[in-house]
Image (cartoon, rainbow, N blue to C red; front, side, top):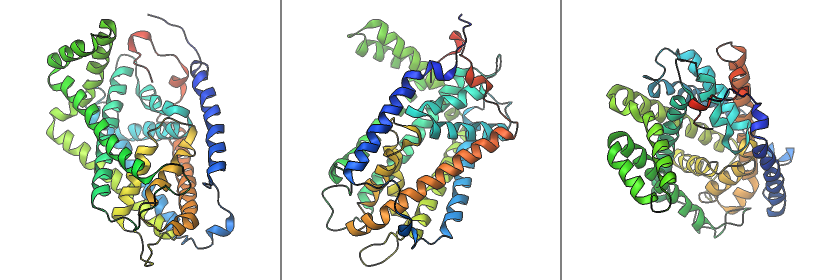
Length: 366
């Protein structure tokens, strides 16, 4: 077992350097596509400002359910951890996801929860992987349904406003993510409910290429599949799925109100619908899955434009879209960083464990 310690930033220096390069590339690309990150102040004159504090409250409700639902996944691995500590750890973790590149922030929550002799890093990480699998499946399913049933603008533009991608490609990506998350969830479920069969299948398929690789993949899948243990407990599974639904509901509700506040309208001057907000939320969610710079800068705005192009006239998207994307990004950034800082000051968690290297026998990797 290695006892060496090294700084978090030193261990992930290559990722931070890559993030810097990617950020510069994203900013350059945005400048040359015409997609505005920060509109002029005059563009905000039509905003209904009462929607901003309401959106802020929706983020608070969303973050609460997003954080505390974790207890259902940890009911065996960490039953002693109280809800207020889980919420504090989650809020710091969400800030880490926002501020750190290439989704390194996903490492923060398991590292903060880890307790020597009580909660292993691998057990905590397994719960996060399962949470991400359920979230991805839930969100991509909502997006796929919305793409099929929510009426779009007519005629549909060929290209996403401000981006060199077609609407057809964007819609195909939405269905592709559903297929991908379905496959991930099926694999994890297979390793959880039929481990021997799943392991044999993995060795048979990947063993053709490399037996050591196949064994490593099977071992990682076995460990990650433990996060699905909550499915054996009916009340725990129901509780997690209910609070997951509330989490995404408040997310869509806030995006809907902010769309109204920013002046997004249809060609007949009617206001956005809640179901359009669900579609935009889904498109944003699957867009920020792409590893990128801190805050998913550029990718976040592109996801918004991919969504709103399908439901509002091009001239409205060009005029009000930058305001909507900018305001949402700023409010989310302020709330997430502020709530993360408040959680640290609450004394329920500390960043000390993140600065230390995990023990080799407990390390699953960020």
